[in-house]
Image 1 (cartoon, one colour):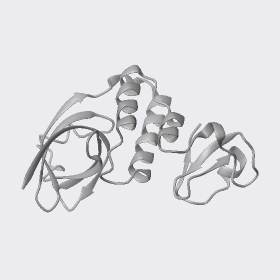
Image 2: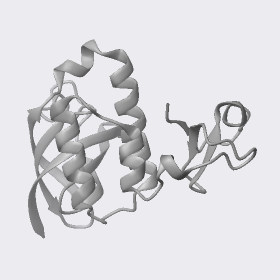
Image 3: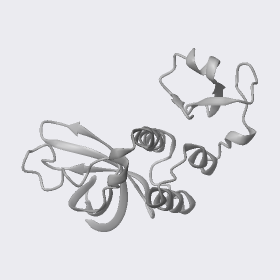
Length: 178
């Protein structure tokens, strides 16, 4: 059994069983990971208030068969986001993209530094995150009509779409980026 202490952004959380949670996290040294939170759904859970999207938290986790959260402490709730709905939407899209488009256990120091800096300076930009992930919007064009004005990104194939072509896509892997 190994124990880890790390800072992480809470990318998402979902119910696992009756009372447990699974949290999706992005860390500096382990990349994207999932952690099990035993009894995280209980109203008296001491972890639940800390493990909200988009909190930056300090976690203690143990790895036996899975990573299990044994302690959580909020470093920053980024309360400024709650009053800025467009920014909240943008951050939720970015965190969703990180959950589905980054490989597990593949740390990226540049991505981590970008997330930390942009969250603290209120300048979160999905285009910058896509660029770090290897999908530069400045050199992109629509996969259908070749327009250089792209507004959507399909993370399954790593392709871009313009506003017209993107709105016609039926794939659940298409994310609005502007």
